[in-house]
Image (tube, rainbow, N blue to C red; front, side, top):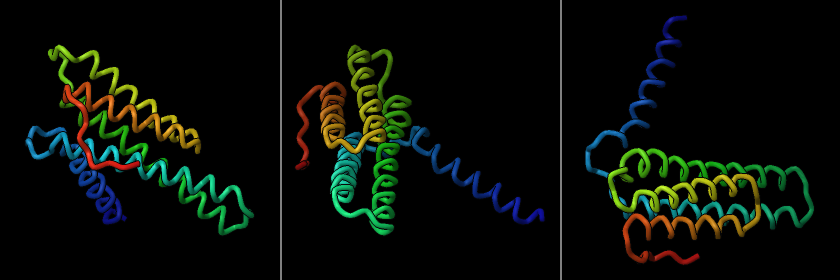
Length: 153
């Protein structure tokens, strides 16, 4: 009986360490890559919304319901990834209160979190467009320049 409990405890401790890694000042992570990942997650959300809408227009059978549920789950996961990146990377480590652009960066980060939440709440493709815009706005506030990404959406 004790052995399964130890296995669960070990898994929980490993998970905690893995999630906490980005809060160790190791200098491994790069801002540019974080923005590219945010945009990739947004693109996945957008595709999921389009697929949900397309599937709901046709005949709804068990297979369609299954596919829609999987697209909803994917949309939720990627919106949560965006929120976690903003919270655990940008807000916890990169956006500093002593920075003159702090308020602007904080407002832009908040907009990304809110827009990701709206993507969770809706299958309306406009929410993904708003999310994409807010990611680019955060980039402008954070980097102080226009984004230069190979991002076609």
